[in-house]
Length: 310
Ligand SMILES: Nc1ncnc2c1ncn2[C@@H]1O[C@H](COP(=O)(O)OP(=O)(O)O)[C@@H](O)[C@H]1O
Ligand SMILES: [Mg+2]
Image 1 (cartoon, protein in one colour):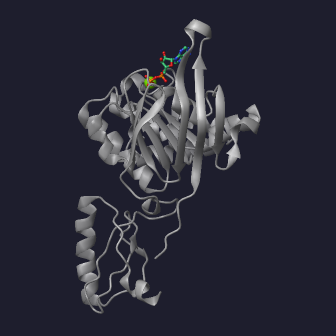
Image 2 (image 1 turned 180 degrees about the vertical axis):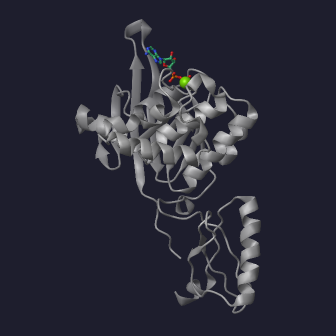
Image 3 (image 1 turned 120 degrees about the vertical axis):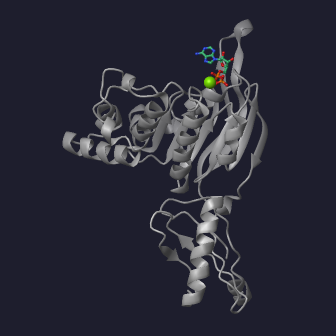
């Protein structure tokens, strides 16, 4: 099956960010090229000062590069007005920071509502949406707490809920687990993994090599440039928006065919798939679904019957 290639969402070409002039001149980014496909989960690593935060700020339209070109969803960012950039940022980009950046004198639910203010959503609807997303993060009982009454892990989950409330397509996270212990980090990473499985694009900076197992691509930076860039998932296997979490289901030999089936991870409902099976096969099918879920990997299975058709 010739799966569609994922669309290019971010394209940086020869991006340079310079600070200072003359003797004081330094480059936070230097001739930086990067193409990001929709659905990638990229982890950026590298020593302090190598330009990771600058890169996220440029991608997130918070900072302008000194030179180079940036295409965001096919549009040249240099040609977009400041006002449209702000609107785009509010709608399409979610930021998550190391120190959570919650507003200390606002309740949890008011913090989560914040991005919707900029998109002009009415108050009752804002609260309803925040309530829904906080429930998903198991933070509903904490809605009227102040941020300081929460643990670090809870604060970061509030920050993630806030970054997601306007349903952005790109999530930029700058060391989101940097201030968390390993258990809280793990919970936060599980959330990010779920978000990624729904088809979101995530670019995350981390110092923790153990977290790179969540990524589909790992980039090491050095002195404002890419040092290494390794994809662990092929572009055609990236999750897409609206895609259920894909789990491989092996349908045992009838005519020796294997079929790719998509299973909605929440409801366990098979939503696509061909030649669906007899009862006995369904049983095996369910079991392998469970096994696959444990391994938490979306693996594609070759559709042999389709190959033969070609
Ligand atoms: N506002 C600024 N003025 C001057 N230099 C800066 C500024 N912001 C960042 N830099 C410099 O740019 C380089 C990259 O910074 P940064 O992107 O924050 O690195 P990282 O996030 O990888 O630690 C560093 O050398 C830093 O000192
Ligand atoms: Mg940084």
